[in-house]
Structure formats: structure tokens, C-alpha cells
Image (cartoon, rainbow, N blue to C red; front, top):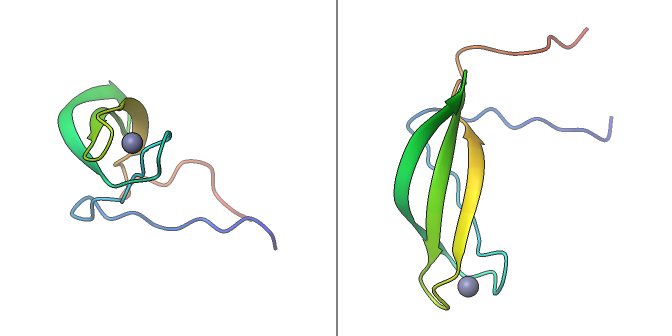
Length: 67
Ligand SMILES: [Zn+2]
């Protein structure tokens, strides 16, 4: 077993690090991307780099069952 899926609760905000300097980021805006996913715009608190990520927020709906 090399793949570990961490369940993400909707109330839990995952910590997303800046892709440039690995500092903590601040959420600027969120938008619906597709079913169960949100598109987040993040700004680095350190260098000001803008990151855009897709976050799985549909924790209640499991997509792709594991046998
Ligand atoms: Zn940064």
C-alpha cells in the first residue's frame, strides 16, 4: 500500500503551502469547479505569489470505491 488517501472534512481547511517559497498561504477567493471540488485562489503571506488550486470538498461523496 503506497497510496494513502486522507479524508478531508468540509470543516477542515487543508494547509496549502506556497509553491514558490513554501510559506503559509491565505485564501483570497473560492469558486465551484466541478462536483465535489472547489477552485481556490491563494496568496502567499510571505512573497505574495498567487496560487490557484483545486480542493476536494466533497468528503461525503466518495468517488471511486476501493475494493
Ligand atoms: Zn511564497
